[in-house]
Each structure stands twice: as C-alpha cells, then as structure tokens.
Image 1 (spheres, rainbow, N blue to C red):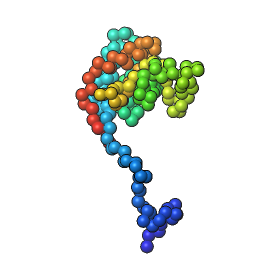
Image 2: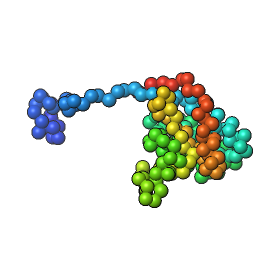
Image 3: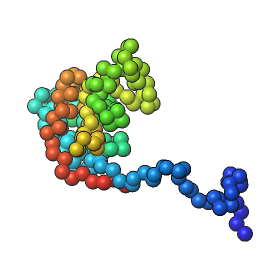
Image 4: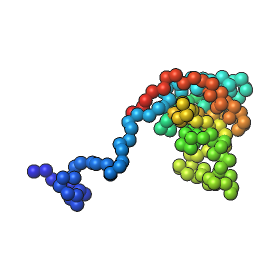
Length: 172
C-alpha cells in the first residue's frame, strides 16, 4: 500500500497525484522563437566590425529569448567593467522589449519607471547600449554593448540591425 503525501490529504481521492489546470487556462506552448548561436555570433561580428571602425574597444553580449547569454566578446583593451554592463544591457533590452535608452528616459525622476534600475537584483541598466533583436515583430533576443560613450555604444549595438536573422530555431 502506497503512503500518501501529507500535503495532498485535503484533496479528494480522485485529484491526488494529478495536476489539472483551472477552468479556461491553457497549457503554455513548449516552443518559442529565439536566436541561435550562429545568429548571435553574426550579431557580435557585425557589432565588433562597427566598433573597430569607430576605433573603440568594447564588450558585446547577445542574449536569447529567455535572457540567457548566448554569445559574448570582449575586445583587447576593453575595460573590465564593460563586461557586466554589456550583459546587463542586453538583459534589460530583452525583459522590457525596448532599448535601454528608452527605458532610461522612463526611469528619470518624476517619470513612470523612476527607480526601476533597482529591480531584478540590480541588473537593469538605464542608459543606451542595449537593443532588442526582433524577428517579424517578436523579440527573439537582445544585444548589449559597453565600452565607449553611450552614443558609441548605441551606434555599435545598432550595427547589428543590418545582420539578417536566418537561422532562428524554436527552443524547448
């Protein structure tokens, strides 16, 4: 005879051990559009080419649709502090589905999102250099750049917009 868990004794016998969704709820889809490694590497390469043209040393991070680091590069002579900033800029652009520059404008004193940079364990960056990557209007990842001025970081991150995303995959 099987012992029943103490935490489900309050349930009727027919419900024990089964998980059912509340009425009207649907199961979450098990796939979604996301960047893959090849696309992420192409984005990094396009950004590094722009950084070289501007003669700046920077860090470039690309996250997938789940916010996880997919590709990263730190150029020689790039500041060590730029590593974490680039990753966090990409993360911020992804979770807010907007550029970090736009989030920054909304995070100024008396604006709607004032103080938002303290959320998400301090990973939210509110100055330019993070841009979401879109495919058919859907955010499938994001890029973050750090190492130059804010204007240069935006310029380098924007260079990736001209990279074609051809190898998107459904992630499970």
